[in-house]
Length: 412
Image (cartoon, rainbow, N blue to C red; front, side):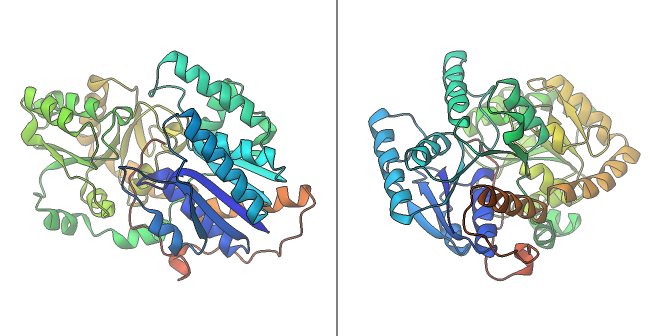
């Protein structure tokens, strides 16, 4: 049975990591799997990791993130041609552009099973009202020819249903799973990580991971530095990533006299080391599909402070494994961090609860849910029966598909 995964681009980010992991799980379950993507453009390309997953890779040159009617029409024609040529039985689309064009192509070619994973949403934090309304209308329409919609969290599903995108019985909640065992093996001890990075053991280190773009809200963290320094002079904010907001963030820190307390690492494949060296991991996002880095941080027993947006409340248990704050509030973010860092007992309790919480977002949980969904829908559509898969193995337990060492979370 041939299965097509389709994503707009395989660039450094959580959606790409999830798509590659999903394709690898399908290969291990016995599906003849193709992973199709558009070019990554000026983003950091990770298509080479798809080849390591055991699936076949197809690049669709006309599939780009930006709206361009003629080019988008060419992409649609190319996707239709791919589906027909390969006689695809299941189409699983990822992210907005590929999600719309891929599902439309699947409808035109009468593919039996159509699944879509939006990887969060664009309901707020991205565009103006008119453009957002247009995209929501497209999502509503394309949901009508989707057999299943995969939400990463319960909160993600709720926000889609509130906007009348799909029906409750279409949704399955399947997290973007993290290979917890492999990630923990890559992470050194806190003091070892700090020594390797040249950081003092007494510094209070806040780490944020992601592309430096407005939706990630790192400007909120930079604005919080003045209040943080007044209470905790040894504080340092470390942003692991790069992007178009980098120079603006540095100017913002310089204007407030906080540049010496801000470190921007640039893109790195060694996120585990930075998380291991941290005291608290922050995610002051204006929108977030799930927040894989939060799961990675919790897997290492790190407390997190994050915005109460998107799927984050389904990942971080407020008052137990972390603290949730309102987005766009430097004062509230600073206050939450000061209270946490000055409360060793609460820090310890958060750390212990975080490790337990992370298990609910493991790669094994994701793979089992996804393969069960494929089997169920294939059976309902009367497709050739699949063999019962062996218990899904995580990548650390099989040499068949290596995984990227670390991928930064990013919007679509």
